[in-house]
Length: 307
Length: 307
Image (tube, rainbow over all chains, first blue to last red; front, side, top):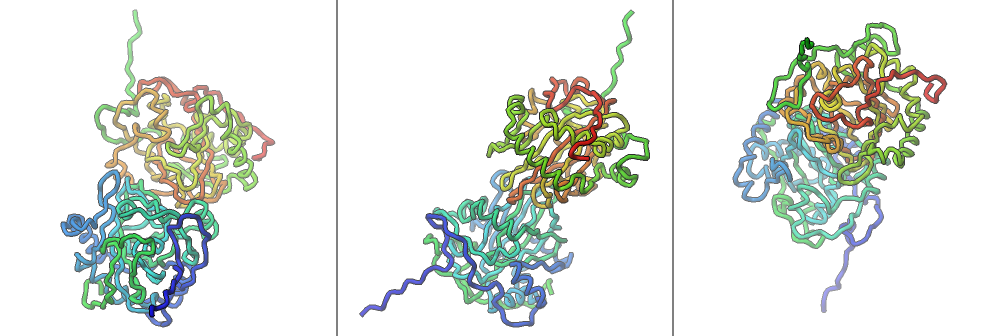
């Protein structure tokens, strides 16, 4: 006697052959029930309503400086380069993103596991957490090109096999973010809508999409509708500011023609109860440095430079 | 007996064969001595110090709407198209700029000669004025590409033969200008420095430079120095706001990936005492729609929709 075969429908389908309607997301953004934690109740509420929350002064100027020196050092890291974890700008060849930075940098690892940061992720996601992805984004002056509008969860679900939107990103600015040097733009409230995208996922799509994403982006009509419904806000603030945002928040960035470069540390925390499965797009999983398949919970570190 | 041949050195040399140092501009930004006029004394002082000044509410919402309808109508103007006065985006082919709009549109002509606008130009330039150039800039949503950093005077001097920086631009926003949809960025105080540029002017340079300027732009080192010295400000504000800025103010704009389009009416007023000569770059003058060679003073109109 064989077991009955049960088909469970994917609650977040994407990469479809034909356009499908947007629909309300069924899962919450704030999974934690605990009232106490490093985030104030108002911050948690704002995060839940807007899909993001900004905290200035997450790092002191001295801590920013330490991280900045680390970024400069990592740009020449041979191990990262061998992994293919360094992505360069199409035209200029300058470094655009470096991935898996917590694996090669004890400093970044300590930063991520500092209780005031780690416990914020735990507070929102309502469980132990692990790192799905870590990276440093560099947007040079003059020639920095932006990222088109997208939801991260759409890609992580389709190409990494992340089951539910129970993940959050933290971006810490290592440079001052002005409104005019290519800072992140977000649509507040957009995280509550799920947008299935059209188009089959090419093999090794990430090799192109990290320079310029073409698959897994909503069409212009949908983005227009969302922008007029929700508006657009920017992540601005002095170096050391931290932006926490939900995995399904619609975001993007313009280019940077000013001489002021922009750099940030970017960490994706995922709930250990939301560990990766096979990619929902039916493709092979992306490399470990893009979608970490080891869901071992992060442990806090004390007595680091970030205490 | 022949007259002595006197060589008068160009006080604002550019398009040089080798780099030359920047130097302080010798002429004022505010040429008018009259204390009275539509600009308040504080506005005049600010204009003189910063090289620009923003006045919100220059047009009422109803006036903006009239102009907007005119813009839509002009996009199909056969006369402008024949003149070559419609410039399209490199990639999408959508309209980027339309020139000489006051010549084909009685409404735009009335707008420019409305006393509260015309008298502002007279007040700053200290004389009767005429229109050096008029245009409408359209930056569509999603794909609008920006303008790199430049001083307008550098081009008008080199390619049109404008002797001195005794001209000003007025940009009236027909759409809301956000910090994130490709609005103009200006470096306050930069108008007091003149920056000679390197590079010979190609024949018919304007045919390329209106899509993407490559000659007559300062090098990155110079822009970096200026940006750190002066900072960067943006022209933001609701539709109907007007920006007045000096012909030598360093400015540029980023691209626009938001769905919010941007459009403005752009008018360059030149002093009748600063009429065009032969272009200082030694090239043939640009077409009339880019650099008007008829310095007949503008006369005010009353009883227009802009009163």
